[in-house]
Length: 233
Ligand code: DX5
Ligand code: ZN
Image: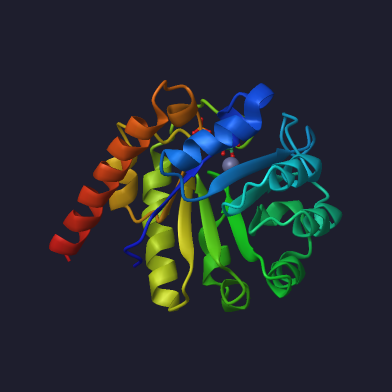
């Protein structure tokens, strides 16, 4: 289990008319990573942003780690484009390709972290497969159906998070676990207690007036959950 944690604001909920400014504001407010949801209106019923936007963000001088969450099909060429546009981490859904291991290795070979995303119904058995686990840096447990920000957190994700935590800890590999969807001030303690390392948060940050205060409060709750995990060991 990892004692560090990371706040990863999902820019899907940002004001796209002022994207650079929104990203700078969350960085100043304490974000550790930027979560970049790439959707193709085919794999999921929504269309968002792609490599061109990531390229512009980098051109604007933003150097914070960016994790791309790919919700598209096919993804092979997109993975290559996102590597070229300097994504730090690429996370994809195992159902979206026949080449899971090939892509994980390709991403890592290019100095990028590789991740797999699990919808509410994706089997966690992927995490029992040593050949996959050894090529993974991040596991993203989704707590909503992929496609939109602002959805309600599904409580079944807490149980899945705990199962994923145990499987990863038992594997012995150094893999971070992220949670994505509907995370807010009310559930973030439980999510942290269940073992998340990366907290992807969209609407519960970008809908607020004061990003700094919002992130500060959330960090406080995560820290107290992490302390209680250690106390209850
Ligand atoms: C949903 C996306 C999420 C979403 C999170 O498909 O993967 O990253 O933007 O936004 P909130 O926190 O509003 O659910
Ligand atoms: Zn996402």
